[in-house]
Image (cartoon, rainbow, N blue to C red; front, side):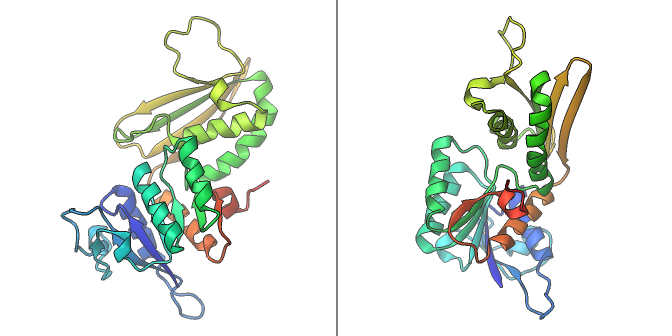
Length: 274
């Protein structure tokens, strides 16, 4: 039985994770549970401390009270979709205590990602800019599309998220750009264009453009546009519920059981690694 802890349970993603875990708490062919919510964590001082995590997430009582710190928790694996600072602190706790971790937090700098890679030398981690199975298939397909279409196309990435999202462009949009740039042998830092205000010259075909939209309650829409003379090809993924990310995280958690220490991603989980 895999005992899972979730941090940030007051948030929408935290509650989606609880809903997904409780939904997966079925039995296997030998009538043994394979996955269970064992701890729910919210910041110290929260008015939700002591509340039943299942009732908080709207799935009924699960007898797991919300607690304030990881040190109070009994768990094998931590799922974290919180903030950069919180995730890095939680990562250090898991590293020191030998706990596995699935990280869906976005916005890490390249320097901060090195902490994840270093921690992966001690514990098994799955870290991905997007936990959706469908989006990770899009990452895989995008490599082939870039190889075939990029030579004659202008490439633009358009992403839309809810008004509360703070990182821009989204981590997923940046990952889309990285996949394209890596496939074409380019450095995204050199070829990315984030908005065109003040640019008074024709578009450079070797650039990758990003457009960001924020508004309403959009969970997450991403489109990669390959525009050439005479035709346009678009690869689009639209997330209508956070449950798609939660279920992807649980798939990663299940896959991670028994794996050696390393920093994996969803390509590893889905068997899409080239």
